[in-house]
Image 1 (cartoon, rainbow, N blue to C red):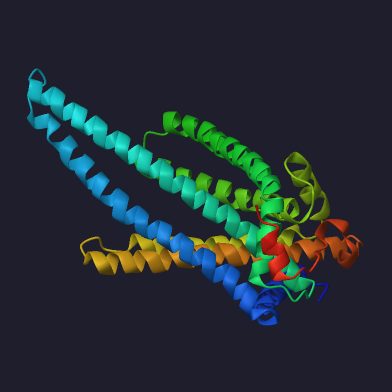
Image 2 (image 1 turned 30 degrees about the vertical axis):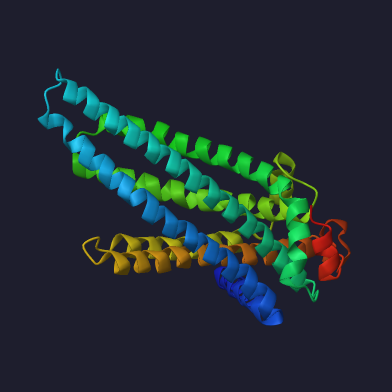
Length: 319
């Protein structure tokens, strides 16, 4: 098998996916709870977003379409502009509110799924009620780390547009420009999957250890050595799965009945969310594998030790 390194890597990928799948069998109630509960919350946010924002968008478009047919010097035109501005401001406020709620749910989902995966890997007989204290204690670190990841992501895609801009000036043929744009986009997307190895692993480190921000990113880059090919293929697998589901979302015909469109979109968005959550499970497994690969006994790590307390004691510790 040494003559076929790619097959060895592929075997490791399948092994990690299988080990991640087995976590749901080790503690079915806990793992299904931390997957289904955030999934329901995310679905509710999507549902309320569609029901609240879609009418606002429709109203904004209808109000804006009236402007070209009106006399710009008339008082009615000024009044219509003010209505459009009011509708737009309401749309921005609603979008900001639902985006904030969605971000909080996703952050809490990341925290509980990583903690639950780590507890299950350590074969702790944990319950869903054991997670609130762990989540409250560890939310600041991942938030700081996520902030740095967002900065790196923005900088990375800003570089993409810097590289793309000369192409817009040099090539006037649309077909040639489109081909080069997609080639460049695929390259940047693929390399982002490679960079995301450290980003995802640093989030797990921020949750399970007292390390966050730049330090967590640096530690992730250090311990991931030797496992990047496997994790890159895992990122490619999950990214391709989400991309395929997103393409199915685009096939949803808005001319269908509203209930059918909403149900289909809800199922597909929930599926994408579930794939991303399972990706976090695999990265938690990969975190322990990285520790073991570097000769550290994961069972004796100070920063991932959990104390099993009765549920009533944990709930009593909540503010």
